[in-house]
Length: 254
Image 1 (tube, rainbow, N blue to C red):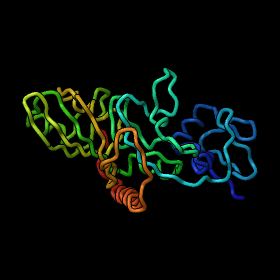
Image 2: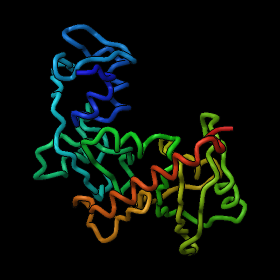
Image 3: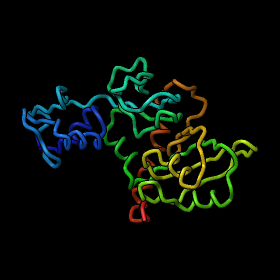
Image 4: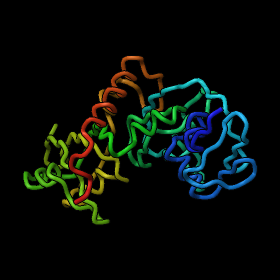
């Protein structure tokens, strides 16, 4: 059988996403026939023995599953937590396959979180060049000025010097003590919306992701999950394709 890049074999097995596989390889914990491998190395998935730590990778692809979870606040997105905190994966009751999250929501954020064992699908959704949109309902403590809205939409400099891409921000409700905003962003920077708001002097009280691409959270209750429909999968794959056609545009920093 033709040799294949090791990160692709790992992703196809359903163990983790291709990006995460590359991190494992770079960390030196992936071996092929007992020898550590490097990024770019290839292997025969039928003949070679590939391990991540003590876990042997199966050459036979598992059945692909695509799950939507409404993550409550207080759960971390990592598959395991060294501090013993609750993980979102613990909420996937009744699922025997090893699934992993597509992207992240921080511990204090909630809402739509995708899980899958399809490494290529996960990589496509998360890859910065795809520009798959993500929609959030964000509650701000206090009022938001027109100047702050304009800055958020135009792009702001974050605490590490990165500039955000232009995005959509609109006011949903405005009260004396709080303002509810709707964000639509096409980046996936760490804690991006909270950091954007902090950059313009706003404090986030609550943050909930309501959609990824055209897939909406809907009436799914916190802590519950369901399979994505065929139409939802088609919608996400169409969003990935659209993002590919837009490559070469303005980047996420300036």
